[in-house]
Amino acid sequence: MGADDRPLTGRFRADGAPLSLAEYERAGGYAGLRKALTTMTPEAVVAEVDRANLRGRGGAGFPAGRKWKSIPANAAATRYVIANADEMEPGAFKDRVLMEGDPHQLIEGMAIAAYAVQAQTGYIFLRYEYRQAARALATALAEAQRAGYLGDHVLGSSWSFALHLHVSAGRYICGESSALLNAMEGRRPVPRATLPRATTAGLWGAPTVVNNVETLCNVPHIITRGADWFSALGIGPPSRRGAVDGGTKLYTLSGRVNRPGWCERPMGTPLRVLIEEQGAGMRNGFALRAVQPGGASTGFLGPAHLDVPMDFDSPEQYRSRLGTGTVMVYDDRTCPIGVLHNLQHFFAQESCGWCTPCRDGLPWVEQLLLDLEAGRGRPEDLEILAQHVDALGPGQTFCALAPGAMAPLETGLTLFRDEFERHVREGRCSYLAGKA
Amino acid sequence: MLSDREREEITEELKRHAAPRGACVDALRIVQNHRGFVPDEALHALAELLGMSAAELDGVATFYNQIFRRPVGRHVLHLCDGVMCWMQGAPAVYAHLREHHGSAAGETTPDGRLTLLPAPCLGQCHCAPALLLDGEPHGDITPQRLDTLLAHCHGRG
Image (cartoon, rainbow over all chains, first blue to last red):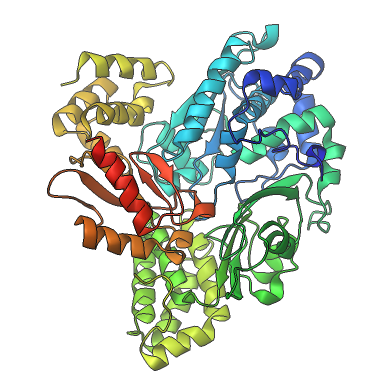
């Protein structure tokens, strides 16, 4: 595969340092913004991204073009574009790779998105812990400003765009796009009601587009090379809506494989290929027990599911999701109850506390799993856990945090049933990994 | 009470937001950068500057993992609590910190040198277990490697 097939990372420097503006321009950077501003109307930019069916890389898979189109035609002139760079899903680091390696690519994508929806102000909402990305972005923002890609009259046009870096202070819920808006307004970042949508009334009540970093990084390439080129990159089966998910995906891989890391591959690459080719297989002495294909909030897949294409819809046949494309590989020598306990500890801790099922339910789940893992579990605990899967599931809570937490629990209760029963029966955990 | 320097930096941040309160996380962090944490008197001064009540600003400050309302040690160690780090050795690193450095999760050592904070996944899963020492990431942590890192930073004070 050449750099042409890896639009997002093909330009990366070998030493991992961020591309400077000069390097980015030499590699064709900012050609997309120039093309959009000089040859396309904002509507034409939206239409091209819509035709490409660029689905949201933050996990939900909502088409970016449809989101942009949903700004009401008669909306006020003040509008915002925000890059969601609050990457905190356990296992995920793809956006960090993109921002550290090629910060200008994100800036160009945001500028094109802002031109498309006629926003004048943008923010990059960055998680606190990504200090290296913050440095790379700050340098790139200053370079882009000096070169006229940002600021007043971008590239001599009548449109101006101010883009700022906002460094958050560390809470998973801020990655939920409506909680992110509350965070930006200096409020306690709990989620907002689903309606009105942010594209109608978002930041300070103005129409606001919030897109994931990887989604935005795809935009310059779609504008430069066209929607057809983008669509043809995907290799998965047609989705429910009839089209193949286009583009590439930045997959990350961690856990008990020989070569953890990241790779950019065609959208729809089978999970097995990621584990065996990118990950170079399981580490010596370990067998694969389960995989979370898209981060902590995606259901477990077992060894029988590894041929699933890693696009947005295919993992759903096994009650899992592509999520962020964050593949976590679990082995047979790690206690799966301990894994579930760790995951639920994270969700319980990061619950914002706004709605009762999530605030009270997740700590109960965490406690039950701790007892089960320590051999203090009772047979009826499994029934209580199963009840939580329903009580904290989709539609029962204010936002998607608790339903996300229940996805690995639901699939784990099935996939690890014998392990649960063995812990109860023997009154102890026989695994060593994860213990001090 | 805010120093001139703090006030100056906060004024710069205010320009990036449509309303002063939008800069409150930046403002809290600016104070923390200068003082190590956000004391009550600074919180009250910030609230006045941003047009918020002190209670509301405290509600924001205490929501975040990285805003400290109490003093921390001269060095802050965030040890990743993520599932990939848990599976690949973080519990042994916690045990080592407890047994050999007198450092327990959520606490500052009696000599005021080190605060140990468990952190949600740091996004360094390819080199688990990982940590942040004074904000900078380090991966593939073993008890021995941790000793080296701590000796180096204690050497600087």
